[in-house]
Image (cartoon, rainbow, N blue to C red; front, side, top):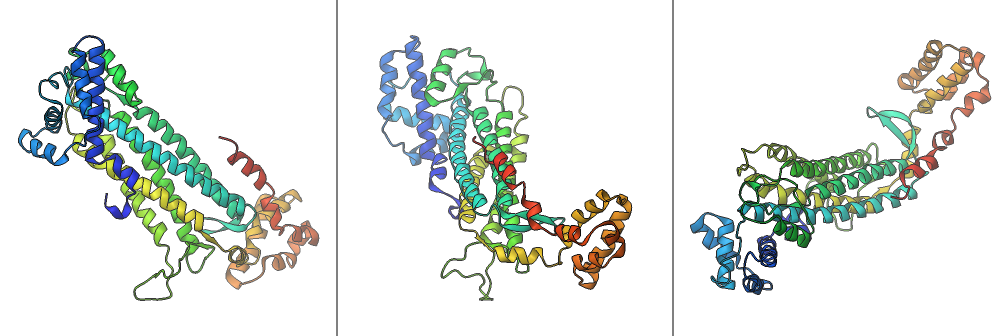
Length: 435
């Protein structure tokens, strides 16, 4: 991923230096396990650890790979240069390249998941804080982009919190599913390596032995991982889209923080654009773009092929780095989001009480009017608000058919905004219960 949309901690997981360090750990722990069951001499296993604090020469490994056309062999050759060819002769014994590659990939994805879960925790904290800050800040709810009934800004933040809390659970599940390793040798039969080696290596790396592998770890696990990230990305876009709507000039219920010295347009000095949330919409597309290739990687020929390899070398770093950046950026947006409560009230009152139509409809039916007649009575007065710029309550009070069923006090009571927020505390108690 390009540096513009990257954060160092996540990028480091996918660096060649980190990858080779994990490869070394796999090989060294495997040697320890083989020595413990007397498969190789213990002095050879100990000798491998001479490379424990050595910085592997990436350029040298690439140089060897240019000849061997095989990355794992290139690494093993370089390792032997450090440890000594005689001391390293038992390294990788009974193993196949996928034992190293697949186990390493899963270690990297587990580490990436830990960062993403921490990112979600930070976002959840920000959403919760803003939800309670604006729990009673009334705004109009919309369906189909049209004014519906009153809600609160706090409820908007709360539903985003609940969505991201579900995403946190998804990422925890995805982490658990991807946290497996395989040191089972060619076609996964353990013919040339003892299963105890796999158990030892996995314990050292914080993984669980894959119950049954072929020559690779099954890719349905990876598909589930990338699918979970895709859902998180879609939720990011969901929140970003709401903020972009709120920042529209004719809405202006909220906007991204505009810092001192910031410029919105090279041509129009007045512009304050929702650039961060527009950026998040684009980044979400990139993360989701990794999902279909991950699904297509599930199908491999027989016990293995490498059709998945080139895909994962791209989508592993790109998707995790992008999602990490996007979650951090969204947290920043939520933290600094500027809210305009007065504009929310003005927008809600733009059509002079029209949004209370359902309350009047229900009151008429409760007063004995059929639903069909009640709907007709309410709608004919509502249309005057749309088409003639009338006041809804005034029109109802002047409608003799309405007033035959309801008193003036009953009509006026139906325009109490507090009626629509009376269960906000109940919803908050549901959403913000202890995890």
